Length: 110
Image (cartoon, rainbow, N blue to C red; front, side):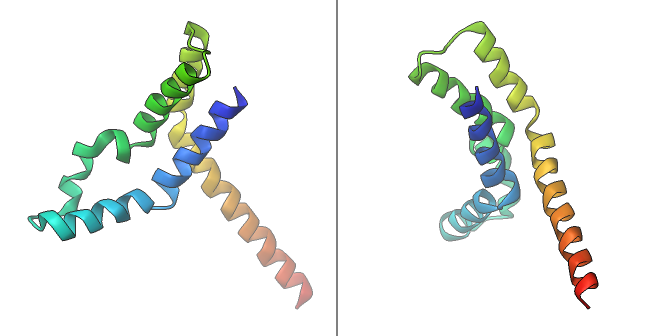
């Protein structure tokens, strides 16, 4: 179960936080399509540009590979997929809290 949670965190970071997927889609769009705005292509690539979708499908594949495919684990994967926006917000909250702590330490040093 912990592996699925860590897998979800990695997916959320790559898709939602880092901007890696958007950059790759933009480069492919600019190189090969060059018509209109690349944002119109993002919804068509939903399994790859959506952390919820990616978590669900990759989680199911993980369950199949590890022979843990049962109703309880499918429910857990669905819960993790549902919580992907919250996990992304927690990442940002932790980053902001650490920045605040660093700023307080700098003020104490000065």
